[in-house]
Image (cartoon, rainbow, N blue to C red):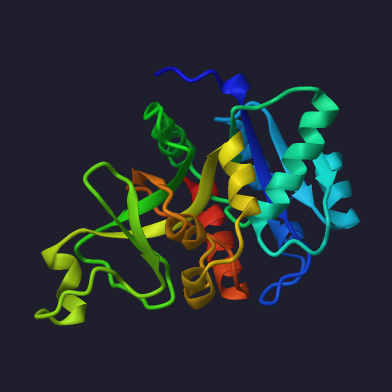
Length: 257
């Protein structure tokens, strides 16, 4: 399927206030604010992008590099809800309905084209209404509790997401699990058909969602499916100052090549 990219709207939720790293979208990496790196990398795949923020400083920064941006409510419980409001605003401004909405994390300054392409390819299955991305973990990699892992069925539909490495290999030491089967780490970008985005945001927070603090479990617990795209290119999200420093060093190493 050669998807018409004009039917896609990419939305980057970007909050200023973060419990672990205040003002994260505006922190500088290689001479640019983080949000600009995410925007420019996303633009390599998706021709129409929109930043959804709740802060004037972020809005002015996005406008300064020529990006599209809308102001959204500061009280959204999830980035998905912020995307839904932004989509409604932008659709009204442009007088256009988009078939697919891609929710791109604003803290992924090293987002790869492969990440977005693999996500979009999920919609080659015309039955898919929500899609997300997983990183295939190598056999020499370690599994860390607190990261998000997932399992999926033979159709690449998600079975479960957890902050504990899954599946649990009962008779094998944990540090050897990746040598015995494939593990997949979740990369938190999502694709929605527009009606699925509306439906998701109308659902109440679910029990499993509250337990794991993972909003995608709301959809699974409601009996819906999430199609999973697979990448082998690592993601480098920035959640802490340590993450930021690592990403800054990666950018410096790229400059030397």
